[in-house]
Amino acid sequence: MAAVDIKKGLAGVVVDYTAVSKVNPDTNSLLYRGYPVQELAAKCSFEEVAYLLWNGELPNEAQLAEFTARERAGRALDPVVKQVIDALPTTAHPMDVCRTAASVLGARHELAEDSSPEANMKKAIDLWAAMPAVVAYDQRRRHGQEPVEPREELDYSANFLWMTFGEDPVDEVVEAFNVSMILYAEHSFNASTFTARVVTSTLSDLHSAVTAAIGALKGPLHGGANEAVMHTFDEIGIRSEESLEEAASRAKTWMEDALAQKKKVMGFGHRVYKHGDSRVPTMKAALDKMIAHYGRPELLGLYNGLEQAMDEAKAIKPNLDYPAGPTYHLMGFDTQTFTPLFVASRITGWTAHIMEQVASNSLIRPLSEYNGPEERHVP
Image (cartoon, rainbow, N blue to C red; front, top):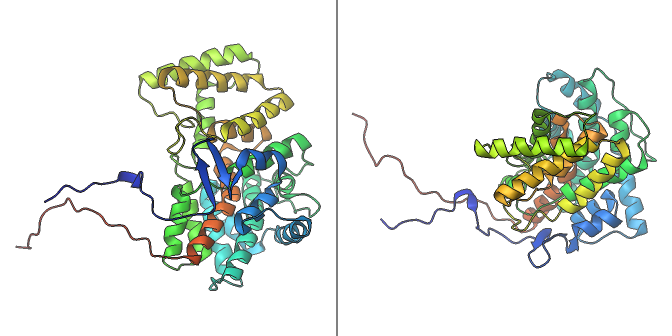
């Protein structure tokens, strides 16, 4: 029998076209519909980027006004969804809550069985608008707090922070959060997006595809890495009285020991980027601003020490999860909530791909090479 070239993990396999995003190898830039993501993060709101991902172009003033009005109208926490969340134990991971909420929202949607382009666009906007209330309430209930009603005068990022913490968000924090939402919004055929496209290819519905994508994102080799970064920081020990240099020294020692023991350290390396994740400089700049805003230089010390030790030992660069984790920590989000924040952002990219898959569908059904026992018979 001729040897079969197995592409484990589908590494290097091109399975379809997409017009949603790409990494430009010449500039090492992630492009959303052709726009470098660092430019979008510097100049646009998350609402504008969501519109771009779904429609292919940035909105004009009138289009943006109509679009934001639709999002703001869908922000309230559905009472039935709240009941379902309350029925889940607080020991359940917040990603389980997101997955369950997405499924319930789909089952209750007025267009549940309609997968027309118009219906899918409405369902995408509705789900995107509803998820911050889910994420915010789940964090609050774990602290014995009641849900906070949305405020229509706030933009997406500011309202998300308001519903989570019940305090008027500071402009610098809103800006950093907005940047993170934009950077997490889309990344071509990653594991969760491909999961969504596989489910969609069967002609299943949008909410089923997103629910499956959430399940894929939960894994620490994908979205869960931002949580793992903070677990690393916690293992090293966050000491608020410590100087930047002292924290960096301890972190460097920790990393050297971890690598010597062949531990896998999350937040470093990326399957697509060979010269460093193009999103990291933008997110690191946002982290620097949060460290200055909150007066927490010891976190920068830990960050620098780990990064330097990994670079010296393995020449492996950080990925987006590495600066995003401590940024969310400084804002006050629980570590378990970091990946649900990723969900709230990536809903835009997932649904853009879902709609693209529907528009030019082919059932995704790869082959496998059998390596079990040869044919045999029951005695």
